[in-house]
Image (cartoon, rainbow, N blue to C red):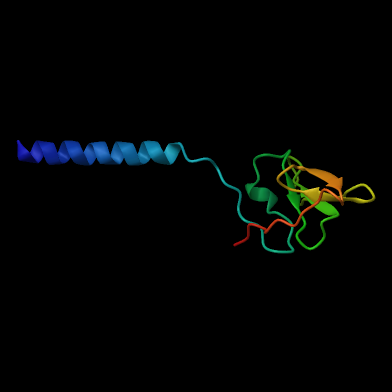
Length: 100
């Protein structure tokens, strides 16, 4: 009886652990500072990635392309990644980048 309880607990633990694993949201590979994103791992092709060295530009991984497109914001604007758009310089703030 004790052996069956141990096995049942073990099976329950494995099923909970594997179920949790399935619920984890996909994450993007962190980009290297000053580098374009790795388009091979991008699944959301509408997402824009900041250029950490130049806030007037951002990157987009178009579906089916291996290299990211490098896009410039309109004059007098800079890219804000959390907003996913270019904003006037007066609205722009430095945000610490998420890197490896």
